[in-house]
Amino acid sequence: MYGLINVLSENVIHGSDKNLSGATVTSVVITGMVVVFIGLILLVLFVTLYGKLFEAVNRRKENKKKAENAAPSVNKPAEAVPPAPVIEDGIEEEVVAVIMGAIEAMSAQSGKRLALKSVKTVKPQRNAWAAAGIADNTRPF
Amino acid sequence: MGIISNFLETMADLARESGFAGFIADDGWKNIIMILISFLFMYLAIAKGFEPLLLLPISFGMLLTNLPFAEMYHPEFWDYIEAEERGGVINDHYIDYGRVLQHGGLLDILYMGVKLQIYPPLIFLGIGAMTDFGPLIANPKSFLLGAAAQGGIFFTFIGAAVLGMTAAECGSIAIIGGADGPTAIYVSSKLLSKTDSIGVGTIALAAYTYMALVPIIQPPIMKALTTKKERSVVMGQLRQVSKVEKLIFPILVTVLISLMVPSAAPLVGMLMFGNLLKESGCCDRIAKTAQNELMNIITIFLGVSVGATTRADKILTLSFGKVILLGVIAFSLGTACGVLFGKIMYIATKGKVNPLIGSAGVSAVPMAARVSQKVGQEEVPTNYLLMHAMGPNVAGVIGSAVAAGVLLSIIKV
Image (cartoon, rainbow over all chains, first blue to last red; front, side, top):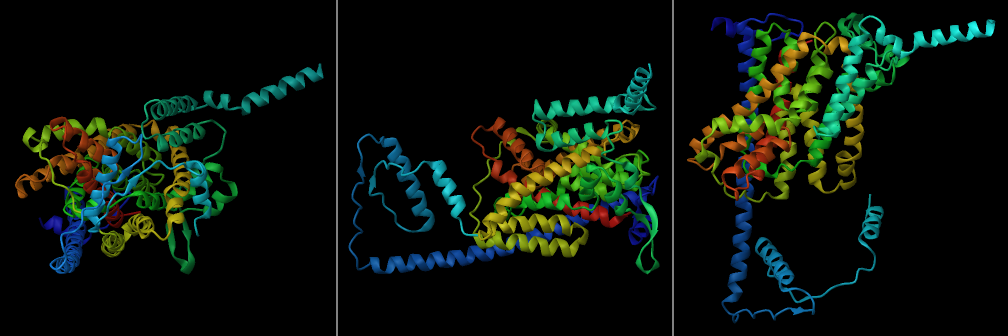
């Protein structure tokens, strides 16, 4: 034990040192693991702390938004159900269901009420490669 | 008659100066073996897909450096010499870079980026620009798994010391357990010198080969250390991380780790800088350059110049065998430490953490996380551990950089 403490106090080993003593090797292992753990535990604490802080801030914002939305609804009649979307002939029901599902997921995430009004095929003005090239070349520096 | 004798003499001179003559000179046969080994690694990279982005440049560098008389790389230029620096300070680890620039071959010039520790931090910049730390921020406890997996590094240090290697060799071999190629090259290029029996190329070869073998090395260890019940744990969904949290993270990690272990600052700093470029959203062009062009250029330079250090006299030694043996031990111990810590977390959280994600703490992004996912799905096909495993996986990158910093602080050249 004394040897280990002694080695830790003179914790510099030269690269060319051979036949490292047991105490030296043990000190490297202990120092290494302890420093790595301390470093990462500190990160756990900081990240947890600011994660909690942001969660609390977000929750407060959400509650505020909910309260704002709930207040006028007392006087308002029940919200009108959005009309059914206009679906172009030839578009499969499955495709419409997937689009509606994605919109619903976005609504739940952002808190905004989104509705699908129509689904129709759009003829692209230029092909995807050309569009990507233009977007890449005109992106502001 | 004179014309014929002149012709024959010229032909004889050409034959003497050709690389073929080098093969039959002293130890020339070793170069032939090294060239054959380079072919093997090329085969593994191209046909088997073993980390091809690095193994292919490394193996080609190996081929170039072992071609007799090609003079593309001069190991003697990289020997430390004693020189007086400004203020009359004697530096016994001095490298004459002027000589390298004056007389060096192409690979000598490229190797300067390794020796001056430029390439690994730049690779880390690219890795940072490609990494999403979201899963780690969502579940910060993953950091602990990333820390535990570094046990492979330090326990392998014991093994190397037992085999009678120097402190520099012990540190360089041990860092293979971090399963992080650039970190291994960073540490070994700083520690190893001419007097050591192994070179940077040996370490890089072992590190990248074992990283490619992660899907073969890890699963048996993971299964041996866990029960079916533990492997079947389905983990809950991770919370969503806001953009501000992702922006604070790289700054926080840089400041904290660099203050704690200053020698880890080049690696961690560049990793986090790359990540900040990505997350900021305001430097899209620079982030893309870091992820693609810069990363690709540095990968070529790093691979081919590290491959150049694999000269026959450094590889065909008993020490190479020791590196191969200790390298696989380092990887296995790292995996075992991660899984065992995962088991502790499984008990502490009353069965909410699947210990399989612990093995991903050995870096090797994203391969190790994919292995956790695959082994988990073997028990419960609907179990998606990938995002949970990405937390320890990226924590392992930070952990191995910290471990590298610790080794460089303790072992002085």
